[in-house]
Image (cartoon, rainbow, N blue to C red; front, side, top):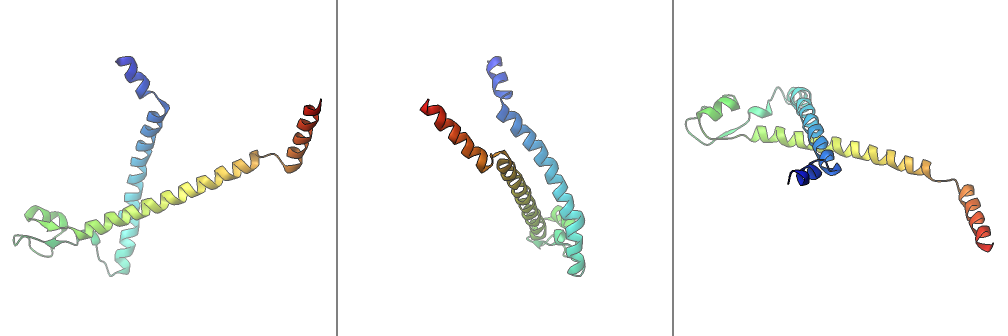
Length: 136
C-alpha cells in the first residue's frame, strides 16, 4: 500500500497539480491585492469615495445603518452585496489576466513550432532523397 501511494504521489501529474495550486494561491493573493489596494481605490475616487466593500443590506432590525460591513455582520444578518461586487471584480480580473497569460504562452508555442519546421526547400530535398532511396 505504501509503494502504491508513492507511485501515486510522485506521478508527474500530481506534482504538476501541486505546483499549480501553490502558484495559483500566490497569484490569487497578488490579484486580490491588486483589486483591493489599487483598482478599488481608483473606482472609489471616480465614484466620489464610495467603498463597495461596505455596501450591505440589513436583514435584521438590530443592524444600524451607516456602520462598516464587518461591524454590521456582528450585529445581525446582512447581505453584503458590496463585498460580492468586489469578489466578482476580483474574479473577472483573475480570469482576464489568465486569459492574457495563456494567450501569450500559446503564441510562444506557435512561434517555437514554426521555428522547428524545416524550410520548404529542405522538405523538398528530403522528399527527393527518400524517393531516390526507394528506387534503389
